[in-house]
Amino acid sequence: MKKIYEKVIQFRDERNWGPNHNEKDLALSISLEANELLENFQWKTSEEAISSNHQNIKEEMADVLIYLVQLADKMNVDLEKEVYQKLEKNARKYPV
Image (cartoon, rainbow, N blue to C red; front, side, top):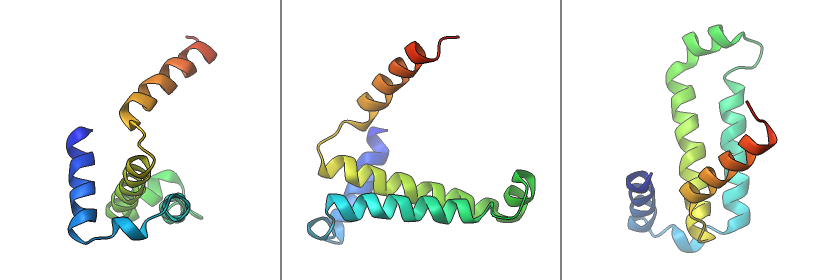
């Protein structure tokens, strides 16, 4: 996760996009990219969508993660730590 985080932030900083990325716009961008991901599945079965849009689905998934990493950076959130904590919470809420 750390390597992905570093690459995303480096890419952003090399283009000086950081000052233009605020928390609200990054959250909106996550939603927009998630909807672009969802669009690949509209009116299709999962199998049809994956077979006809596999590459685009992968790219949209990456876009969601890229914006999420940027939002976590902007808010000083340790995303990896939060994921582990949320998994622990979910394990208590939904025991095996």
